[in-house]
Structure formats: structure tokens, C-alpha cells
Amino acid sequence: MNKESEQHKKAWEYDAYNFWVRHNGKPEERAKEDAENPRKMLRRYADYFDHFQGVKVANICGSCGKKAIPLALLGAEVTVFDISEDNKRYAVETARAANVRIGFEVCDILDIDLEKYGEHFDVVFMEGGILHYFHDIDAFMRMMYSLLKPGGRMICSDFHPFTKILDALKLEQPAMSYFSTEVFEGEMAHARFYPEEIRRQIPKCRYRKYTVSEIINAIIGNGFTLMRFDEHPAWENEKLPGEFTAIAVRN
Image (tube, rainbow, N blue to C red):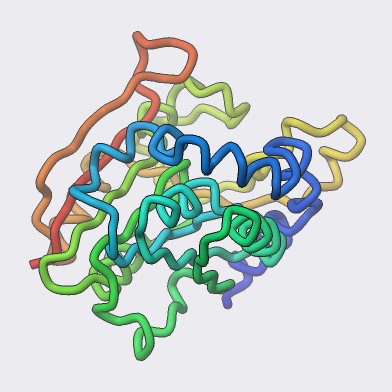
């Protein structure tokens, strides 16, 4: 694990379990909500799956299991890959309360064991803004390609690159040139929910934000066939782009 990954790990293990309890409820409470309507909990992402039963899914940077557990409830065989032990604790406890099983590997995504997981999955799935943690998008896409079986599908949903120049999602991150290639230090995603005196203590992350063309070219350039690229409105302003979803197939 490199220094930047170690920095991200410290940030994502800072009070993370307690944050999820405050934000999502206790594991048994979240499990009940997931079980009531797992497809609803997947939101728009459910429509990108042809089916769920028996599908082997790698949930990349799957955090506290907020999408992995609904997928498992629908019949998928899910393995979460994430850097945080606290995220694993919450996800595993929630899965147990929901009476489903998920795999959870705590690791740097670029260090996933390909002897064990190479060409293992039908789908690699990610959402919620993760690409900016990886400063070499080609290396990231090569890993996604390696995890998939031939013919497997990548569902890559992330923050829209438009958010580089305008904080359309209200994440309180700095604006910059759309074409900037700068790696910069910034707050981790949950810091804004803490009182100021605690907020200052939370370890920072290092981000690299990409343009639309960088993302598309990394997908195509690393062996995928790009099937579609959808853009979604910002959460609080439907006039602005907030997220995107790219669907690509391993050849």
C-alpha cells in the first residue's frame, strides 16, 4: 500500500463505524430497511443489471455495504473491496442482520489478489464518487478489466466531471480548471457533517479529478467496449449534471 493509500485508509477509518450508525442507523435497523425493498435501495443502478440471481459482483470501494447488501438480498454473490476496516465492520454486521452473506476484502484496490480474483466476476460495480482517489486511471481500469470474466460488464457510476468547475453536488470541494491534472489535498467525504473542531482533526485525502474524455479514453484504451454513457442531474438542481454512469464490456 502506497503512502497515499495509507492516508486514505486513515481518513476512512476515522470514526467511520460510528458515522454509519448515526447516518444509516444501527446495522439491524439498516438491514430491515434494505430487506423491505432492496431494489429501491439500489436506486437507478438496479436498471443496469440484466438480472441478479447468482451474478458474481465485485463492489469496488463498496464502503459500508449500502449497495452490496441490497444486491445480495436480490440473489447476487457480492464481494466488497474497500480500504476501511470500519466500513467492513458495519457492512458485515448489517449483512448478518439481513440474513445474507457478502465477501469483504480490506485492501488497496490496485493491490487486489488477481491469483484469487482474476477473471472471477460477472460484474464490477462502483458508485458514489471513487475515481478521484486513483491518480492513475489507466491502472484502475486495467484492474477492473482483470477482475472480469470475458464478456463481463463494468458498471462505473461516479461524480460528473462538471463538478470540477462547480460544486453542483454541494460536497464543499474546491472548484478548479476543468482541464486541471492537479493532485490536491482535500477533506474526506464525511468531514462536512462534523462540528468544526472535529472536522479539522479528520485526516485529509488526496484527489485527482478527471475530464469526461479522460474517463472514456481510459475505458476504451484498456480493452473495454463502451456500451453507453449516461449523465444524471445533480441531487438538488436538475439543470446541472451531477453524476454519470458508464457501461462497458470486457472483450
